[in-house]
Length: 99
View (cartoon, rainbow, N blue to C red):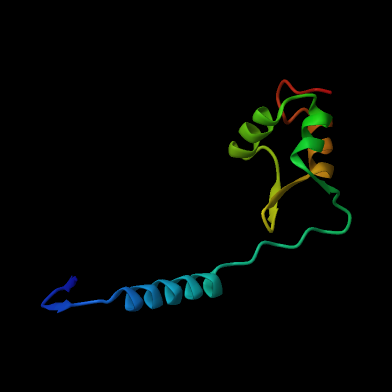
């Protein structure tokens, strides 16, 4: 049951499901798409990024959460911009990681 100012609506499970799908569709359509990777960028797995830095996956996850690594989701996989990682590493932008 939904109460909206002076009205009470009774929704069935099917109505609620239809409403949820419609909201999700509108959000997908209104959302801004992720920019496509440029051909000059090299993208790789989190494991490859960990090997470049010489750290474990937990550290990579932490760097991703802090926004220090540029990542994209491709389906269910997360890929890391290895070109930018190497540039940031060479310029010292990743703090103590200096491989």
